[in-house]
Image (cartoon, rainbow, N blue to C red):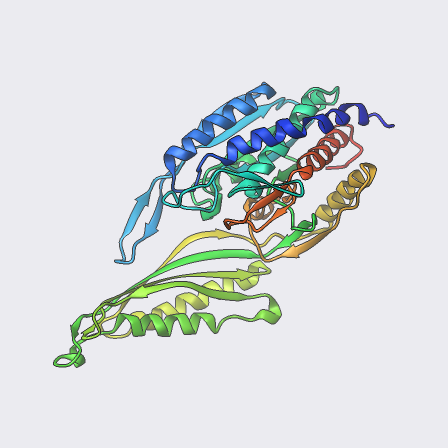
Length: 403
């Protein structure tokens, strides 16, 4: 038994309490566009995290600009973020982050979460990432009830717009990295329990094309076909894919036109690009602009290329690898192994890493089928991950882990 064990062992008895809190949070429909649901979620989190005794702040986010299929930019309101700080004068300060929104729109009914056997709880948002919020809270409670609490300061930042690219909260993260030594994010682990090391960068675009309508029979020559322009643009964009070098361009949505006897004057599409490094990101973005300019130089065509969101690549550098190794040692002291691997997925950890903060960003629960009706969490991972994070925080406070 070492100096940390007495302050960690109590978490084993909290499984049912953690499950109950997770069920309460997961039964709140907090889709990114569900402002009343996000407000309810915010209130539930403020109540749950009040046990930590930190300074709570509700942070309003600016509306973000969204391109409509008609080519108009509209202001879209966002929910509020929650910030909690404590012991800022400590010699070591860290940032703990998560999101309260789920990847399901407000008009999609939310079924109550339920136990499905084999120690699993099913429900939208249980794994991504309300389970992670419960892990974060439990670990901080254990830290604050230990003699290590005064040696480490922390800020919790929970945003309401992660699932749509964090367009309103990005600036909060960039500000929050100041004076922090480390960022911990509570996104779910991979289904086998592995953590994510490197992440690709990701940029989302909306594209609106305006052409000129005309009768398809009598005045075909007078029209400018917006759908044909969209087809040229999307094919040229997807041709930039270079999977060998980790570059992908995916057109995920397209619409336009109407009756077939009218030359269509409207088309709209959305696309996503993913890259491994900043150099490729810059190159692909410039090439997309060039493709857009080619279409705009065609008679009767106006193409609007609007960047919706962007997260830079998250590089697995030497310092971050050392932190992962230290976390792996923590897991071994708790009786299990921990591995990691790169992924093409993105999260707010990309933003923090891009700002220069070392990040471990998959400290949440083990589960699977995220972003689907079959989403589930392995309930034992609530306890396992809370114990892991608690020990890691205590070892940081004791300066056994160098940050």
